[in-house]
Image (tube, rainbow, N blue to C red; front, top):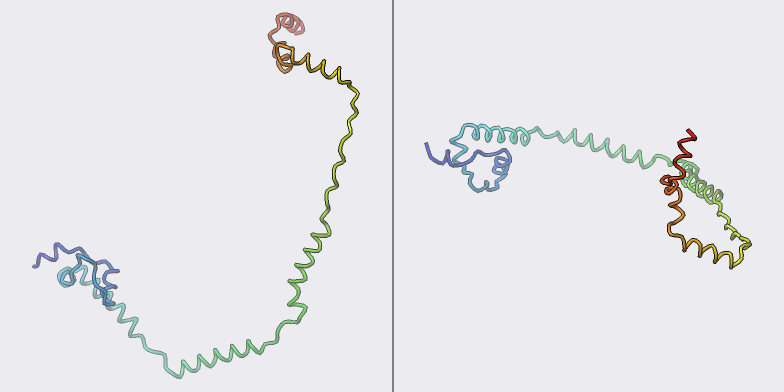
Length: 163
């Protein structure tokens, strides 16, 4: 036996198909491996047999081919000569689309503008500035008042007595 059998890798089916159509094998594959390796040789013979069965299919007789082509031509002419649908049926999709667009435009309503709100200024400027000054001069913000109430020592006994 040749040492090529042990050094060359097995052929894959795609490699065999490439060889079948005359393409060079991948590097590292040798044709001698097909003769020495039983697995690869059997696979090569099955690929050749498969190709032979496809290539050697009996051709269609000319009479059958002519008959098939004649039937095909008759079907094409029948389709060409078939009368078209009436005009109203052909325009129905376009009319439905136009109706939907018209309905959408007709139902569209523009939101009326919101009139500006007129607020009466009953507070004088002096009162307004006094209120701002009192807020600024406070040590803690108003939002902290409820939290301070939780920890106020005077409020705790009254809450306990209420229970």
